[in-house]
Image 1: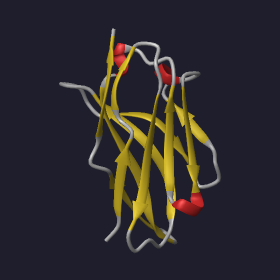
Image 2: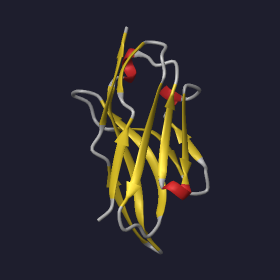
Image 3: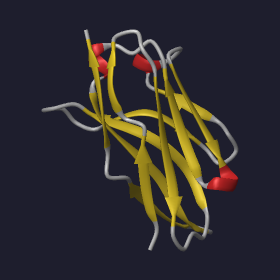
Length: 119
């Protein structure tokens, strides 16, 4: 069984920084695209940033220039460095990874980690 384990959330003041980590563990075939999504209370889950196995990245407009996604393929781990945090960044952050091989890829989700930014 493959699992995603997140860490690094917490409470921070506006303007501060946090770094989220997500490690994939278990019987892994291969990990393709990895990413971070977030969901604020009463809102849908939205994409924050994704990174392909080759290192190409995509960011939501709201976090461009403030957040940086990176990954360590040897460790099957993805990171999200969040700088200049704003109260509107408050949400539960979920790690996502596509696991599989060939043409068979299954999206996996972490349990979520709370990020709270106080004004």
